[in-house]
Image (cartoon, rainbow, N blue to C red):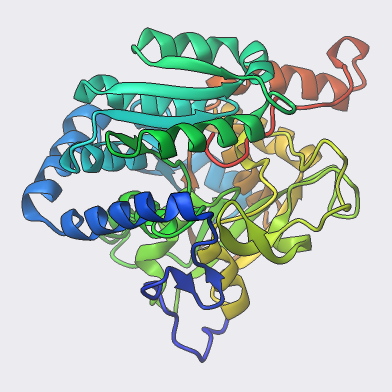
Length: 422
């Protein structure tokens, strides 16, 4: 692909805008806490003592660096070389901990005693509870009452690590209610509590801050690919819901003209249907959750909201930096359907003995489209953002549906919408 003529601005401006996207669209009670957070982040992010502490935790608690694994049998299957950045081997089985550790250490430096977060499917809640336990901080996780029913194993994990799970009982009793109640709690306890957001979304400084902590993925991958192959990759591929694992991989390579980048969205039942979560493919700029970014157009998906097979991609917006990179032409965004995800998931299981998350399997499904179409020497890094243990029930259900198994059925609904932080 041709590198865009306009120089990419990889740092947002002082108001948190990546071009026209981002910013801070919040009610007055949130301005003070966000200003305090911005000041704290810029004070500590380059502090040598803070950096050394985060590096120790990443190494000894998370198990970083995660391997860059040459998937030889999978590469033979596709006809080109595939390297998997193994975030599935990170503690807790996903990339989420990179950001949670960084923010929790920042919260402690800022003198906060409690961490507040919300969760839908539970993955962000589990990672937040883990770092709170590691650092000896109180932790309140807000979760919709209906989501708690549907995601009971993650509720148990959160409680095992000492965090409170607070049922959100308003509205539809899912993620939207949890977001509202968590933010309300943070405003009321801002002097002593820290609000830990889980993706590159929301009001400034969260998109910048989450990118900062997730960019460890790309820094490691750059060093590892040069050590193993003596050159940079030809292409980077990652799934994109809120977009933190993708930005984590892409950021370190944005100025390398030879490296193509592809973010893979969830087309669900198809981008021409009313059941998908393909924000950049079908959406338009709007304001959501305190930021301006691409959003799925109102009325183009079902009344239940955006949809896909993977809870972690089921979000009607996307991080504002992704919107900027799309418009700038630096990253190409593709969308794959649920039907493409299942065989891609199975291929990696059978060829490499690795069970990927359904989120990561969207990126794998995009590679399947390229099978036999690239030069055998093409070098692709795919961010394997998480492992698939959590997805077994959903996989069994969906495979049964695709195979026409009447016992695998149900109505095709996934679990709770992932929303902002799960």
